[in-house]
Image (cartoon, rainbow, N blue to C red; front, side, top):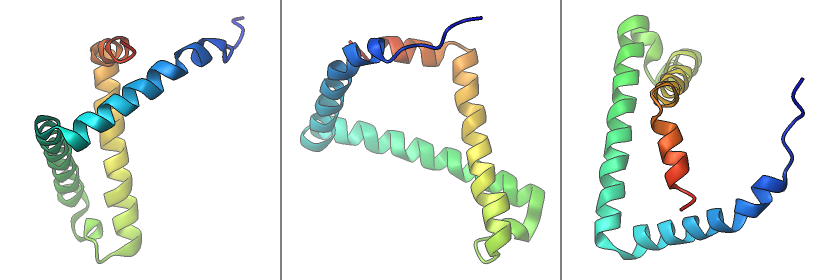
Length: 106
C-alpha cells in the first residue's frame, strides 16, 4: 500500500506558484495583449457555458429556465458543473492537462 504524499514537495514549489501568479496578474492588468488574450479566453468559456445551458434546456425544457428555482439549480447549475468536469477529464485523458501543469512552474 502506498503512503500518502507529504507536504514537503509542495512547500518547495510554493514560491514559484506565487511568482507565476504575480506575473500573470501583471500581464492581465498592465499589458493590453494579455488583457485581450484573457478576454478571448473568457469569451470561450462563456461559449462553452452556453452549450451546457442549451443542452440542459433541450433535455429538461422549462425546468432549466432561471424562473424555476429548484429546476434551475438542479438542471442549470449542476449541468454546468457536470459539463466542466467532463471537459477537464478529457484534457487529463488526452494528456493536455499534464502538459499545462509541466509548463506552469517554469
